[in-house]
Image (cartoon, rainbow, N blue to C red; front, top):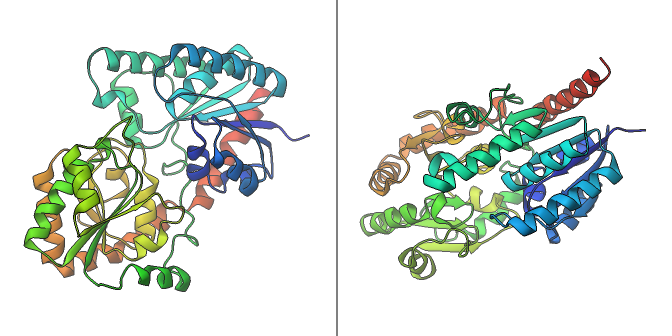
Amino acid sequence: MKPKVIRISTVPLSLHLLLQGQLKMLAETYEVLAVSSSGEELHKVAEREGVRTCAIPMERHIAPLKDLIALIRLIILFRKEKPQIVHSLTPKAGLLAMMAARICRVPIRIHTFTGLVFPSTTGWKQQLLIATDKLTCACATYLNPEGKGVRRDLERFHITSRALHLIGNGNINGIDLAYFDRTPEVMRQAEIYRRNPCFTFCFVGRLVRDKGINELVSAFVRLQQEFTNCRLCLVGDFEAELDPVTPETAEHIHKHPAIKFMGWQEDIRPFLAAADAFVFPSYREGFPNVILQAGAMGLPCIVTNINGCNEIIENGKNGIIIPPHDSEYLYRTMCGFLSSPRLVEQLASAARPQIVQKYDRRTLWEALRKVYQEQISNLTK
């Protein structure tokens, strides 16, 4: 009988996008159950990965009553399934799953920390977030920060005194190098978006304040007045309820003739292949997959000096690192890309080799499999 593993995230989109292929790989050795809130993406996970799924409603924001109900449901589920491993990612799922797993005496309780919220907040909200992360750590048996920057923040804020284990070179899932490549089919699709050739900056992600969208749009609008032969492609959706952009930014996105709003896309490769540079001015991250994906597609990146981004990008080698919250610096850097084609070409030439060397998902999967095997072996010692 295969050992049972439960992988859990707050929303199904995280399982669908962040763990693509990984659950199918784990299912070769383990009986895998994927848990999250309900949604179409959870059904896609079941079909694509060939694993069982279970929907348990969880809220991303603070909701005491709903959180308590979710905790009880997880306890019932864990007692029924009797897993050897519960492995969580995302903050709310981590807190609830680690608490429930400890109550149920699940022997191996792993939590992966991705982008931390508390370093960029203050006051009572920061203290609450720190307290919940401390509780998550106290209930877990194995702690996995997604990158070196996340590990530094956990140590700096004294979230736990226990060991923090990086898996591979960081990131949750690595990168599928065969998929994220400029294949003939991808380039054919990209030509649709390159019919009017001009220098294209691309952003992929949630169109929210926290991703630096206000600064990006402000910098681009100013840039386009000086360099008319450029455009900005935005791939992703707004989140008006959680973290809205300013009304001025939203208006520019919808009305500016050189800003192409593409909405959420299942396949981002044609948009990356059609671009000349990738821009990601986020305020905080854990270890952003999209930077790996853009790099694998051969794009030079402009990123902020934050966790994850400054681990993937080496300033002046495969991209440029700028300060967060700085529209002026972003504007000048984008100007530099338009003024210096040789710089862009030089950065682009190093982009894919850097990703191939350090973030092949097969290498990370093998490292994760080894962690699971070691943890199970330790139970019998």
